Length: 453
Image (cartoon, rainbow, N blue to C red; front, side, top):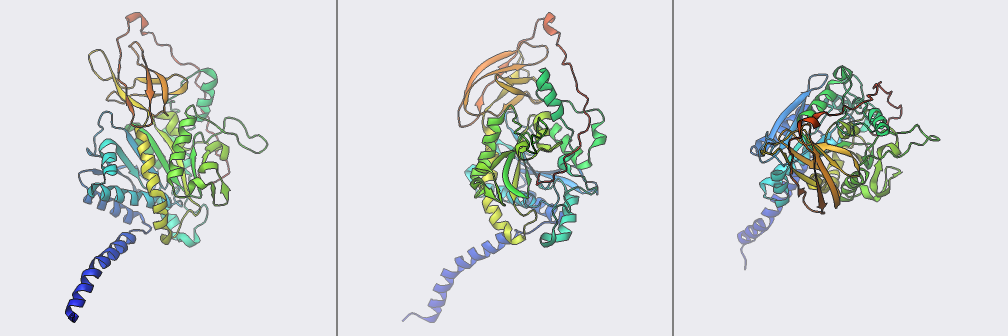
């Protein structure tokens, strides 16, 4: 007969791993909680401590009440821009009471670190080939106001704005008005200038984010909101006044590409693509911002009009402040989408712009025939142009050089490498025609409609 001790030993040998597994589940489940400011900072530094060689924490500025706007960076060379390696960002919690994005980005940071250490090839490749910047909370002051109310009692607007109750997604300089004017007058189509004294017209959080955008050559971005479930793409501001109460679709020159970027998130998300969510229907789980409702001075359009960055706005939950118990299922619903969207930064074309002596040329313009939106090379002379599969005619130009044109076919996989070598222009060709017709940028009143965005 089998001894009692043997039975106990067998039972323990079988139960041991099971209990460990259950404990693992409990431990991993325990970090699904709402993080107040100090908890969030601790969580970010814990990730940095666990993965010190592939992460860096830096602050881009302070909120009105003096809280740091911390960014966690993932890269195989943290703190360094490597030529031909694109920069990507995720921004959460711009509206203080829309909290799911903040929690997802904290969890996503933990996930990237853990999967890298587990040698997950997909995540390792992403971190080796991309410089990833994560700002879990753009509005830490508003969050504290909302969190004091808690999930059960949170109002639709309590904690939405910053400490001065300013809606940060109506606080960026209005470049759409200028762009729509330039469209009619054949003016600039990228990197539109900011109005004089713009720094005095924006909140500290907005100022910090604009400076951040100017200091890093971001290529792709998403900002995470709540109050609906849909991937929203530019433009947010309608070109025309409302027609019979309905706003009209405002396409960017990159409309097809933006639709595809939004679809990438929606279809990789567990339920966004179904269309019916929170009592609203959005076909394929995506929408043009202006066709939903027009919004002035938002962050998404500003990215596209002032920088090389393509940004979409992700509305991720019907409930702006879901209970902690809802966080695990929300994470599982968004995890693949957060990774898939990030991978989109590696499509299109990229390359270096050099002079005849192989010196890199920064701020060269890269234009694609048929798409009225140019991008520029970074300080190291590298450029990135997101494009859908197809054949394109691409021209690189810079003041003092003769332009150079190439034809390139883009496939569905990795970005095609296309370098440009610019010859110095003969002296008489150096007269550059200045752009004319700057429009006075009067501040437009934000619409009263306060939907999720």
